[in-house]
Image (cartoon, rainbow, N blue to C red; front, side, top):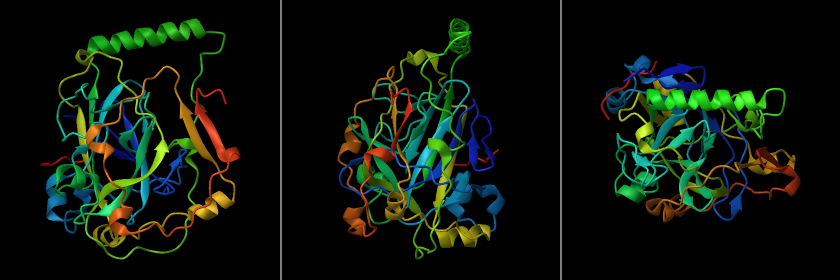
Amino acid sequence: MGQVRISGAALELPGGATVRFMRTLRLPETGTHPLPPGLGTFPLRRVADQQDRAPAAWRERGGVLLPVYQREAMWLSFSSPVPVALQVGVGKVCAVSGRPWSDRLSQDPQNYVVLPRQPWLDGINSGSGTIRQFVAVPLGLGATVEGQVSGEEVWGGVQLQAFELRDEALERWHAAQAARHERARGGWAGALPAPMAPGGKYGMQAMAAPGAAPPAPSMGLGAGGRMRQEVFRDERPPADWRQEPSGRVFVHLATAPQWREITGEPAPDSPVDRSAYNAAGLPWFTYYDADAEDLAPAGPLADVKPVGDWLGDDQQPWTPVQPGQVKPLGDDPGTVADGQW
């Protein structure tokens, strides 16, 4: 299995996949909303560099850690120069299928996303054409996706695993790309997504507000508000993909006090106030790919309850998004050590 590397605030997996963990606005847990902006990346540190202070279980699993506040939202930004199948686990529950973590790809139900067609994933595949936002919550309450689907909270964090195309399938893909570019020479190449800054969704800079969350246990991901986002079906036959993963990584979610204790660094300021963001008229987004098919919602994820059922009502003010704030994207006409998991 190949090495996973940290490059700035990004994880680079073997095969070409790059993953960034993006800070964002937390959605209300009622209603359906457009895609929230990127407010900067979460910093990443290797667990192997924190051997004296990281928890023993983290050292055994290896990987990386990032700091997150209770009830902070995140999304995952993806890029790759060639097709890669990427599994995303939340506490070892697949965020796409809702099934237990597996070292094999499956298409029935599909337990991965395909890069670069899938540009990001903001949450669990729990609805038709919608997802429920990734929101950090302490382990031990039963509020995580892991706790609700599996009945226990053991792992927390995020798990990533990449699979490459077989040589023959990759050669066919390169040939198809070359033919496409040849047809497009001297003209428009087709409806492609607008160029994005690193981190995707135009990579807006964070407007941080002061404040810190109280100490809390290790963190996992629960479900937050609902947004319009498709998880695209893989159109390739299963035989196109290699059977063994080319790389994997365990991403540990540290509380702000844990981050300071382990790394000696202060955690980033708490996220921007969403009411102030909307009051300023700043953008939200919508994304559409006319040639892609959305996966059906995952049965085990459809009944996952939002974290507010455990943490109480969301007290952060909310100013509704105005139509003029929503910007179309896509073709809308408008080395990290691995351990024992």
